[in-house]
Image: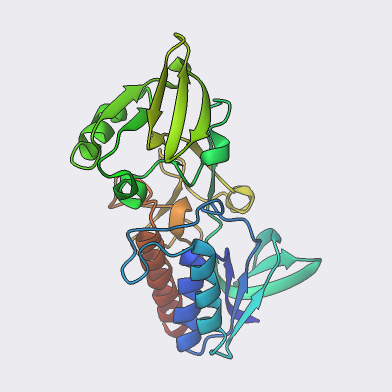
Amino acid sequence: MYDAIIIGGGPAGLQAALTLGRMHRRTLLLDSGAYRNGTVRHAHNLLTNDGRDPAELRRIARAEIAAYDAVEVRDATAAGIVRDGDALTVTVDGDALRAHAVILATGVADELPPIPGLAEHWGDTVANCPFCHGHEFAGRPVAVVNASPHAAVLARMLEPVASEVHVVAPDEVSAVSGVRDGLRLEMTDGTAREVAGAFVAPTWTMRGELVDALSLQRQESGAVRTDPFGRTSVEGVYAVGDIAHPDHLPGPMFSLAAAIAGGQLAAVAVVQSLVA
């Protein structure tokens, strides 16, 4: 019987594991190897690690967690989860593993606008977060490939960073290709624009099989409804990272720092529940 099973080996899950390990709580971390930032080579806006490869962040975190004997890390995917009396049962590689608490840190997946060539540059010169990737295009032109009302807001945010900000709708771009120091946008009107980078608004979906299996309550955003400590509508189940939308926030907070904070808070709540 585990004190907690953490499903997801990104920043939220890793931080939860570290916190539980330091409290000597028997913990299992399951890592499927699927990461939202899997194509990103330089993660930014994270104190003391600005510009570090996310894969290196995960490697360092695992090495730190390995110092705590209470935490077991397994490279595996959870196939199912059910409540079993006062405990929760997680199915992994045919084994039924029981725990007092489960922390879901399964993350989300992005679906990009269907523009030929765009996906090949996702996580490099194509991004969605100006806080994480805007500065790298400083002093050069950028494109906001977005037809939503938020496009104008994003453009204004980028004005102090970029030399020019071009706002275009996705259906105005016929193809994207890489050029030296940036991208070439082929427009449907026959013209072309060269920019240092482009910002898009992907459609995100949760890796939500476990969320659906537990019938967790969701917010209008589509993310799992939680309190500030990651507690969900099902007792003993916590949601952290990109899948979580706490009541006090306007939406899920897609950032490394927010994911790490959420993982720590959920782990604290688990410890408190175990001693209550």
